[in-house]
Image (cartoon, rainbow, N blue to C red; front, side, top):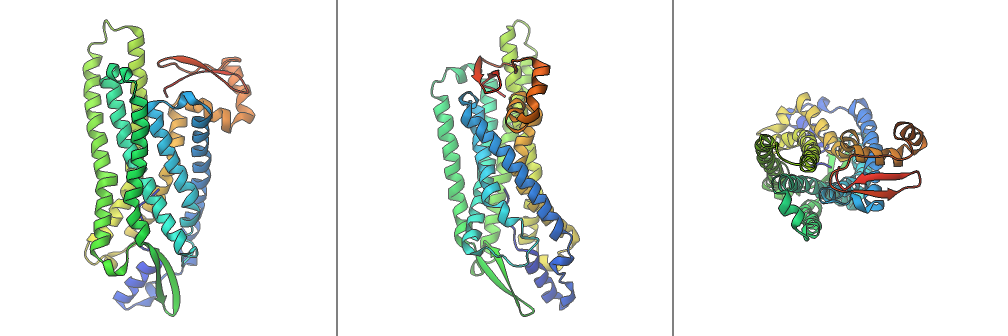
Length: 373
């Protein structure tokens, strides 16, 4: 999942050489460390992302009870991550390995579309999750009494995908194969900004994506989490007299909010270097003359991190959620986890309850699980 790469290194170095009248600035790809490091990193991202997100989707498909309201947005996040892992990562992983784009215009356009859709789905779902957690903690009774809450949640999740697709269409529509002549050698570059629309169009798109898919989502989630934290601080002073089930339910919802907060922090860290580079590249005067090792590393790290975000959420869920960890162990580590789980829990694996407990049949044992994380 990432914003579009402005240009590949060949085009950047071509401009540096032409501006400085020194052709020795161009470094062949075989002499660059990223040519060998980046594909290995992308291979790890692909394997972890495919297994992690694929397992999450299997959990949601096979276990109806896991399709709670907050999990609906996590399903949406997972679908977006899986989409970019399968449809984009195998192609863009070679950008720093091959000097020329070898996949043609269709894959170029498809790659731009899937990346932009995934970014939009991620950002908007995080906002929806923060609002949902605020509502669940601050107004728990009104949330439980609404019989249409689940339907509205599904409708909102579908609307998020629709908005993300609409906003991603321009990048895909205008993407094309740019032909560059480098010392008599023709280099093909997958580029989303037509030359006749320079410089206003790329600047506009970079700024819009920075605001809509980064700044505003983080601002919204920050506001709702501040409001939630204020409510929790006030509520903690009045816990005396409340029944045990109410306190337990509140703590469980706070735990879910913490998981969502982890998603938000991972999103903020993953996309910051890329947005920083894109803003500098398209708005700072004389970027070609000032393109140095710092910005080169920033571009590569930002590019990798935005795709790495597509495999981080399953890892985060495994580390902090006991229920999801149990399912991951069941599906991914079934060869050796069953004996370990039996030794620890006997023949029945009991996970923490939140609202109501139910029984889910599995080939190995009957799992006592709940609707929350």
